[in-house]
Image (cartoon, rainbow over all chains, first blue to last red; front, top):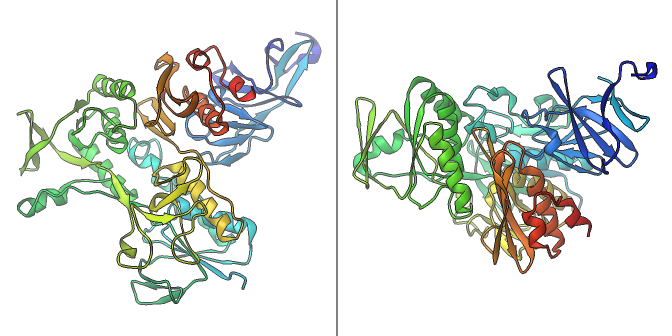
Length: 106
Length: 413
């Protein structure tokens, strides 16, 4: 890893990732989701705050992620829970692309 | 004349979200919710599941906090309404107080159908447990914590969810269902069979096409004689045999009632300035061109919001596609649209790990879909099925069958 990427964890190559795709990233017993939106990549915790279900199976619509279990909705960029049963916000994390690779800072 | 006061009868999800929506648009309007329960509006889905299995506390179920209602100036009156005077736009509470309104929203929900074993067995009828509210859930939870075997009368969603909680707590449930399959005719037989096997693998017993011949209660044990000549001995009986619209208050009034309070697509009832939303409303659905009454989380919320908008004069028809879920063990079942009007039934996926969905298609258009899988595995495709059916586009059967084809591509064509 180059020095400039210190503190960042590599999620995946950027190749083949389409708009509104979700990439699940597991690290240190935790799970995260990285989303490709119109204006770049964003990351949140990977589990819904309502019940422990993986948001990687959810549906991205515009800048929102909808949980696949009970349709709780979060804003991807801020993590804000905007539709019940979700009421606790998701944590968000910085994401960057360097040399064709996606990195997350946890 | 501008509106001054909106009264809401019933304090469930539709009421809470209607009040919240009204306040988003109007900070001045008086909002009063008549609440018969001792709790602020709360989520009901956990009552059969996480509340019983200790994964969620009863105190955590409120949609909005007390501070929220206070700061938004949404008033609760902890009384029941005994009469509505539509002519004089006044509610009469159980203590004979008169409460005038400008607009009225009725969100009285639904109530459980009950079993009646006749005059001779009134004690048995009275001892059967039902689930509707927090108090019911607490009683059921206590009975499960202190006893071992349970008969569940009715193999619908509520009964099966409680049975799932019972098995998860290491106890045993016998599910007694009159019909040929679980969860009625709206759920595909294949999915009903998967659910049945799942329960049996976890220690429950599913009894289909089974009727109760007699019940005896001796020394705190119920002896249930069944039509297949067998006898069950259980500690408690819990019944989930369906619900009906809670319209008791409006019997013999001018309000039009037919399987619930009849409304148009704007939540308007037959009475001027009176609206109804949620389980209690038999509303006109423009997409399906028919009246329907729904009992689901999503509907209660969205219909309450729609009523609020229409009370405020926004004239927005309610066109949400029906959607519901049931969680049993680690399985999540979802249903969208209508699944009883089709010429083709197409399966997508073939195992519970990744999810199985049946699509109901008529003249190449998706009418509805029903799926089941490990938690979270069917939600995206069910949601997309709903979006595709809303667009009324023709679908290619091979695309639906093939899990490699993302359903989002069908939307973008």
